[in-house]
Every structure is written in structure tokens, then in C-alpha cells.
Length: 89
Image (cartoon, rainbow, N blue to C red; front, side):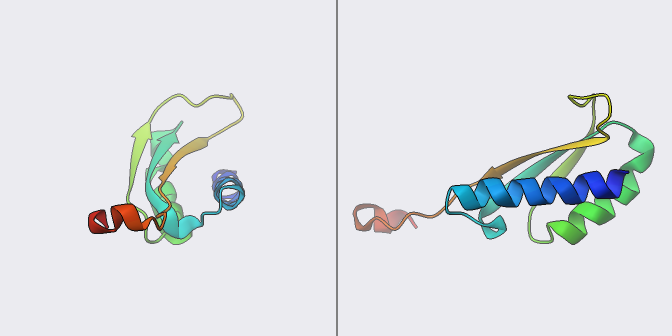
């Protein structure tokens, strides 16, 4: 089920972000790998609902495991407060 897999991916991403002291607000972009391009519009709606503030791209591609319909690669940056570099923020 594409929806359940995508929702589980969000849970996994949140757990990974939290382990590094980050949140979904720190996400900079997503690359969504979709096994079946006929699921494009459903995927687009779901990604926009689950990650409303994150830019993304959806690619039709093979995914890692045969039972998976979708994979998401996420890039996040956490702003570190360092006065030495304050002019760069």
C-alpha cells in the first residue's frame, strides 16, 4: 500500500532527524523514488500532505526492495548557533 509505505517513511525520517536533534522543519529537500509512475498523482498529494513545507522531486525509478513501492531520500540541515559564523546566517 503506497499510502502506508509513505506514512511509514515519514515516521522513519522523523526518528532519524530526532536522533540528530533535528525536526522536519530542518528538511531542505526530498527526492522521491517511485516504482510505478501511474502512482504519481497519489504520491504527489501524499508527499505534499506529509511534508507541506519541503521542496521535492518525484522520479520514476527502481527502488531497493521488490516489495517497496516508494523510497524517499531526505536532506536536512540544522542551524548551529556559532557566534564566530554569525555573519553567514
